[in-house]
Length: 428
Image 1 (spheres, rainbow, N blue to C red):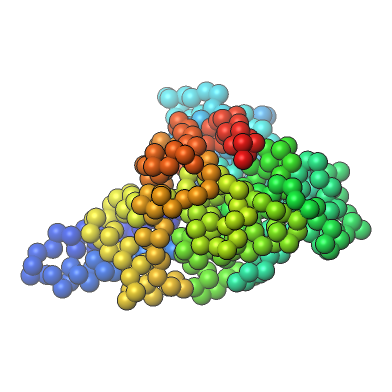
Image 2: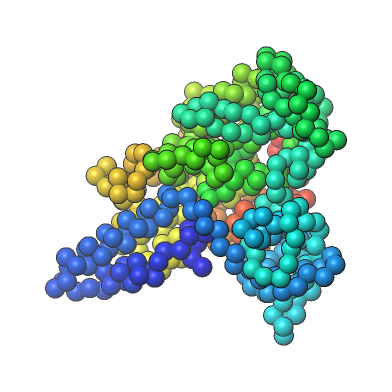
């Protein structure tokens, strides 16, 4: 399947685009209409959250603590992953490949745990989140559900660091204890948040949920960081789903204001300095935050995992993946960014792609950055990350993980990921 965060450009649109590219002068008008239609569909796909999550891998057998999967590009990848089944009602965790039967076309992986439902033969969806649920159900970490007031009401998980008392956080919330019960009698007192102490604000990527950030919580918890896993305006699973332009992705060009609201929340609850984490589009969001927010001085550093450092490059790559002619891909970018065309994409405003290009803007960066990216990222190419790191060796620590594709660096090499993060944070 062609990738647009799990979405596929329809074959009919692709045929229109190809027809537009090869049409002769006698059909210039028809070709122009076809190209504009294809470009508009492409642009809208980029900015539209897709709730449809197809189950594309096959569970062949589940026997004891072994899962047999049909071999494909996903199931043969190294590392540990989650498996969703039954529309997300079932979630299991599987380990690295232990055997590959090339004749049968299957791989075996250890079944490390079933978090909900019952894993059975049939279709499933592999995910890099590995964990499922919330910080307590997934990791046994105490946390609070908190609301963050910004352009709209946002929701976050607040997870105190190892040496902090959970009762000192987030006024008025009930807290799940490590013992496993919800302590409704444990009310968090207004204004009693710790003064100072390191905080991390974690921002997931396009088409993802807050669960994407769960993998980072153990190392942050051990280091004593208070972690705020913050949703933003188009996050999946919000209690009140956004409507209209707020329901569209703006590729970081507006979502940064939601991270600003999270930084304000952290400051009001005792944080003096914060570290921002961003995965994929979340990386683009936090880069805009430190460039445009008045709260940037409170940010001590950034950790970016497979970030989009240049949306033009990523969109051109996605156009190629979807077999769109280059001219149609460029026209799709214009639909997103041009003052006379952006309404076709349904966004709140034009998306300023120049402002989102950190390869060109590398000289403006003033925060230390840990940048982790896989050379074979099939969704967000690593070349802009590499160029950005080369331009700013004074501020950027670059870690390349082999064979991890998109946002799976932790899954493929947890030790490298966590060690790099710990070293970076301890140096700040």
